[in-house]
Figure 1 (cartoon, rainbow, N blue to C red):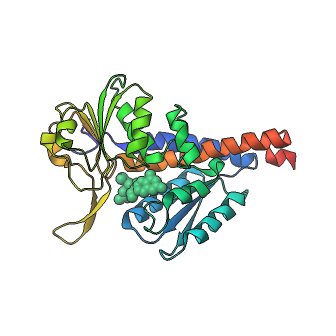
Figure 2 (cartoon, rainbow, N blue to C red):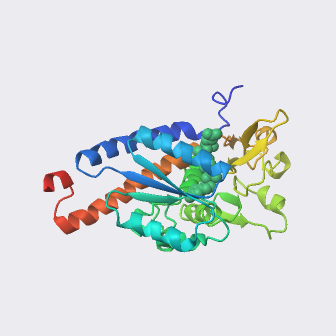
Figure 3 (tube, rainbow, N blue to C red):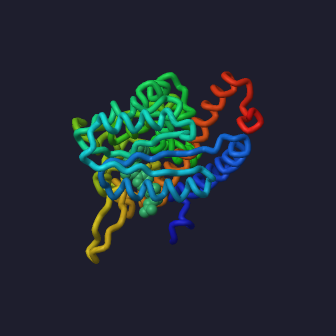
Length: 306
Ligand SMILES: Nc1nc2c(c(=O)[nH]1)N[C@@H](CN(C=O)c1ccc(C(=O)N[C@@H](CCC(=O)O)C(=O)O)cc1)CN2
């Protein structure tokens, strides 16, 4: 059976297409009113998975009518130089949003970089003040990968209230925000990490299992409850026996799909939706900036004002 025929597969593409179409409509109106959306990507050093992510961001931004610009910095850059570059982008009225691609080199404190992005341009919701909003159930601008993962779970139609959810991986950009997003929906959430005694014992209890640890095929069929929804957030580059490289997730999809009722493929699952949500977040950031403009100048139509 092909991937598109098998209803067990939760594919991100169709949901992403719907979001991108809506973003395109908003972007067209915003441009006509003098507020063309523009997203800046900051990459530090070289990472293959980040290159894939940025390539898709550029392609989908173009489809959505959002101007996209990549700023690449060498791995040897200092955190002070990066902070200065971010402050320059904060001050540029043509820039709507800034995304800092992860990972960054070990000598750069990522929290300091995220804090340098002005909260109004923080399209990932990763400024310490923005991420705090999730705790208060303000969810309109959540970290993209986390929001994409939760949206795919919602595609199953499962009632999230009281659902037993297990998240394997507690990163600040994926695992932790997923936990808060799902708690706000009424799910019962367990988060496993590198000190968890038996990940398998927790995973086997889950109605919905999220995995984001960066370990190819970590989750096998015997770690999954029959009928569960499995959301695979891993993006791992693997070289096959024929020498070509391909992307695989953190879940052993071939075996797990025989047990689970739903599973996200990799590629084609969370990834495409992550990109679409980044573009949607860019429009959320733009509308907040326009609200400030309106409060200051008495109109939200910049072209009419000039
Ligand atoms: N600032 C951030 N950095 C990173 C995030 C994030 O949410 N914010 N998450 C990951 C991103 N990532 C892996 O490194 C990643 C995300 C999405 C995709 C993607 O578009 N995948 C598609 C297409 C695959 C392909 O073209 O072959 C898919 O899965 O179908 C790739 C990578 C880490 N960094």
